[in-house]
Length: 248
Image (cartoon, rainbow, N blue to C red; front, side, top):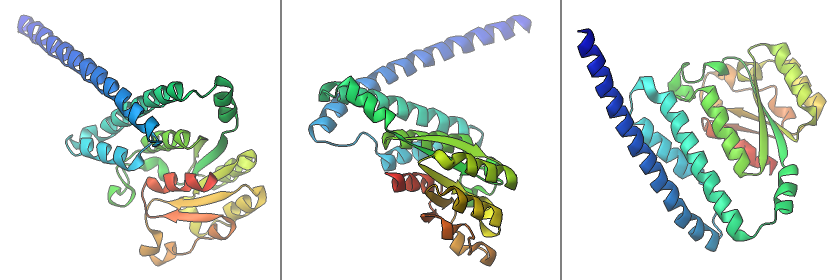
């Protein structure tokens, strides 16, 4: 049995090695095709970032894997898409003749957005996925960061279940160019968070994953909304992506 176990392991390793070789070839082929896509987009002045298509690609991948691999598959797909986009953008920049000094100036001028999440957002992907989606907070933050980069923005991320810590995070974001705030249940009654937003005077957009207006009556009122520039609600993780556009 011990010999058979070793033999089986070697067979499995050979199979995995073969699959790895196939993955490398497929990746090389995909990146090669990106050159043609980059040439077309550059000639027609088309932006490299297509969030609708990318979400469709990820959703298609998630539909063919089991529940136990949802988060890992999402991480893999978003990482792959980001690599391809970065490669495509680099090709377009080199062909477009943008000077390095201009690129550096644009990078230095990027606005910094603080993304602050409140109670229970650390349970994303586990807590009521029918309302809040299957993405974990880690995967969502990665997607927000990728979208921000495409828009010429930078993001830092913070999450806490403690009201006082969220107040401190808002105060520390006073020098940011903007705040995206999902205060969770605190949105409906935390005067402390409301006063913190009003006090720092940093442009703030309130976001919610679910459509709070279509839920329980106590969720219909936000004490934070009156001191925010706007509110985005009901688009799942895309609520954050939509909010990013408010700071352009």
